[in-house]
Length: 393
Image (cartoon, rainbow, N blue to C red; front, top):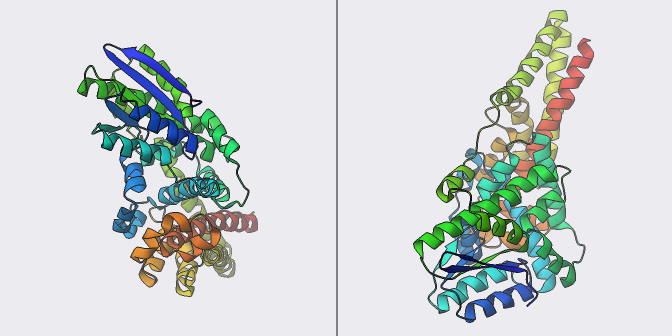
């Protein structure tokens, strides 16, 4: 068996950490052999509840309240999550392997032997939030667009290259290849999750005393998790609570959008002070540049013509109100005009593997409209702002 693994003893329990690749036939077979050996009483898997539901109950996607996702500001995160899924799905389809096959195998084989299954990974939403919390808006966009590029590329991937994923983690592979800030990302993507999953294993041992435990995790986590489990120099419940917390941005950072708004308003004020003609010229430049770029983003995403018009009107206004973004307005408009069907939710995973699929699927299109119209408005704010001050100095 070539899958990386590490065995250790804690009290009267034996723990086996089995490293896998998430799109590997060999990994799925190794999981099956391990569980069927009947040496283990509990099976832990590197999944959180939302990823478990996505893997085992994809039909539940149809129950998602897309408007609530937009209103609560979770659209960017959901878009990144779908792009990540598409990245994995593309590799799996090229190899003829079911996405997450080794995790599904672990769940199904454990069920056959009536073994308890413990989900030990942190919620992917918390991980992404902790990853994003110290990154600027532009770095957020760079990561998301980079992830799109990885998901939509037509480059073929060999099974040998997939096996090389055993040296890392699929989340880390997908995100850090698009960022120069690899260390900033690897802490929440790898280091924190190593400790979080180790803490959950210790919790599982308390609930299943004197039991042998098999943990099926990405190969990139085996070393870090084994170090934490061998040292056990932390309080498991406290670690789980702390690593599940998403701290707010530094207090002064939340004022930056308002400072930008103030500067734009000051620009308008001085323009009108110099002459009404100049003042109105600056206002119209703001409207045309900001509205056009946001509308262009919506159009590139395949938005309805009415949504494109909404983007043009909304962007210059929302850019002066940091509490609401252009993407929230355009996505809501598209959602009203073209309400997604159950079929759109059901085919979301496969449709997001191609650019045409993102534009065809109503759910994916709404998220793409949100992303691109937001980016257009953000670019428009900077372009128009520099242009305004360039005419005042």
